[in-house]
Length: 154
Image 1 (cartoon, helix red, strand yellow):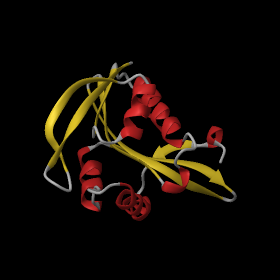
Image 2: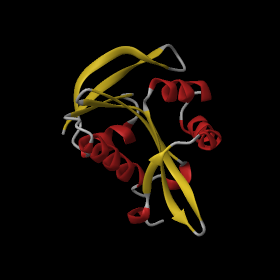
Image 3: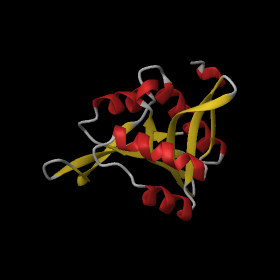
Image 4: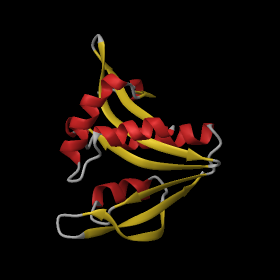
């Protein structure tokens, strides 16, 4: 898999079957097709990260970003299981950050579960810092789980 040939492109309707299946594999409480459609309707940026694989592009990951004024916020991100631990998430996140900068963002926010150790390590290595905590933000198998609010100055 050559990440140097990967590209970020807007998500299309025909991507939703793959994105929703991937989302369901990755998260205990996945976004639904309705959530993705709501984000599209709200004007959020929905992206697919893909690489050329023979005659067709193969999707590796996806993301949803909301931009307001000079801020960007990562609402959802996922990397297909077969593409994990190969730098795909890091490359996707870097491209999202670059895109936000190119469009005038001066800071980038996200929320993450404290229990998501791999995501926390990725975000910290990209320069994100914890700036807050939202109590009971995420559903959990028993009750609710907090979210760490992280920020990257661009």
